[in-house]
Length: 137
Image (cartoon, rainbow, N blue to C red; front, top):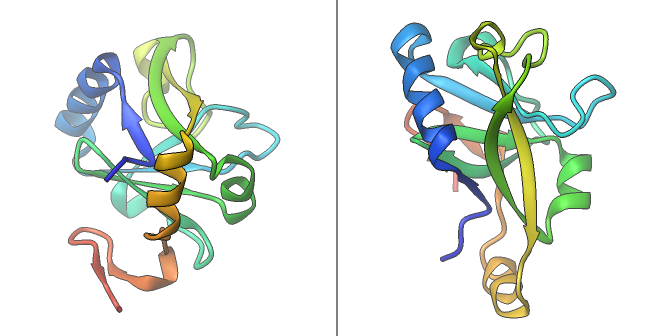
């Protein structure tokens, strides 16, 4: 099945560096006024996802969530998490590295969209163990 979220090679490298410093991570794409197209990256225990947040999948075995209202706008696209030079979000752990995460996207084909409709994403409220991503259903 097609992934709703993926990572570039640069992203994979940076995530590896961040895990070695901070341990397991969690990504969240909120679309808030300060975040724009930058997903926020937190040590896994330092951010609590909202019950309506949508679990898009994992990048480098790290869970990636998106705010419900943002998912409504982006559900027809695959999110591609990239790394560019610059400062990350104020609370995002990559900030001191001189690099920041950036969300790019591509529109799903009709065939991919049909496959994804048959497998709707989980809401955070459906997940009772983020570390193991065990679901209640």
